[in-house]
Length: 58
Length: 546
Image (cartoon, rainbow over all chains, first blue to last red):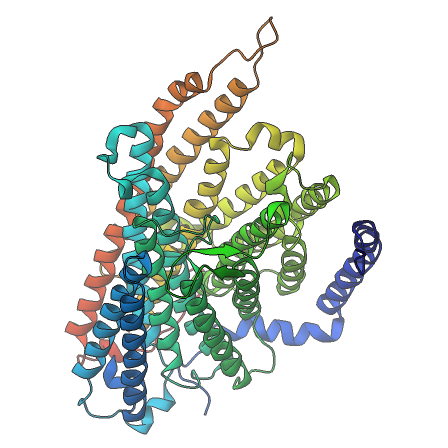
């Protein structure tokens, strides 16, 4: 009985695609975190937790 | 707490508990002669207690529309108390099994008192009972504050908490009567697993709905971690628990997976339970409460994001390091080992970020035991993630695996990191929730801190020693080329360390006992001062240098 993909194919796929998609994800995450235009909202978010009247916005 | 619910919500609550009661009665009837029948009675009794609580408060005046101008914190308050009760229960059983290992005759010839049954009672009690309730309670608090939005309804947070605790109760009572599917940290059987899926989907939707109502454009990073915890635990739980019950009237089921696939699925689940239950959620806690308590914004918000994606993408592949030197293909073992080593980077980003946030507030860490709990949690997080990466390397694992070193490692993480961040968080959160200036007794917080520190250090050092001695004894050969020590020889060598570990565990166990007393007295204080003006004081975060 033949399977749609065998063990070797799966391993080859993991070792090739797996490597590149992980690198791509890492690059995207780092670029998002370091993108200069995002700095302002990050700063605001970091400060926002201190700024509470302890009631929700209406 | 019922008085906070609207009339419609009270009615739905009664209907839901009635449905649960019917389900319990059906299980009790159909499961006669099987352990499932016992669980039917437990479900029915639980439903009666919940329904009784709702009916008792049923005729209380309905809450006004002004409730919508406030955050909804009743479930958080409930979760804090329940988490502390589970901590006391789970750690008590933990210390019990620690003594049982030192004195194995303590089983009274009763099946329920054997190590194999009591040990999962301990792990479920502390991880899911204590840790889970703490995560749920704090996530409700954090998501509302950082979104500046009230929870979208008042019933689903209760469905999550009540359903979740029923799951924990079914789990620990099941182990004592012999119900287990023999998967570590996933022992409960199919019906309890289905209950948890329902609870968890409700929890996920509640969180998403709250975020959708947010008034802040950016979602604060703590929520990312809580979301990862909720989403990934759902995926892990569902996949690892795919099973076919023997019949609908029996507790026993068989896993959908077999052989090495079953082992890999289990440890993909098992290590990600460490990653997303015991790490991601508690990092969410740390990223909110530590800066808040220290009065300083997180040192690097950008690094918290890089760390987040590192943790979510690397942890997912690390599980196979639990299966070194097994029938698992070598490349899968290598994959797990490599990712475990890479994990050191995002782990130390988080630990470093926490400690750098405290840089400049060390005098506060010295003076404030609550902040010190969080600081030590970050230190232990850094230590145990380093140790974990190291132990995942195959040759190191050949020495450490199956020994007490693993137990020492796990407890450096759970006592030093997870418990300490929770205690620090609770001691910050309780005064905010019950609107008092501070905890009832600062001295008792101090006592708790030092008991926890002493307990953790004694525990971890005992297990490091015993684990490495054990590992070396198992691999020492004599001149004739045979093993120098029998297994019993290694057991005898462990005995003093087992006593030390049980003493350390006992010290740690005393902490939450003191902590619960302190919390209850704080609540009492809040009731006494209610109406005198102190209760209406705005809650302000302490500023740096205060």
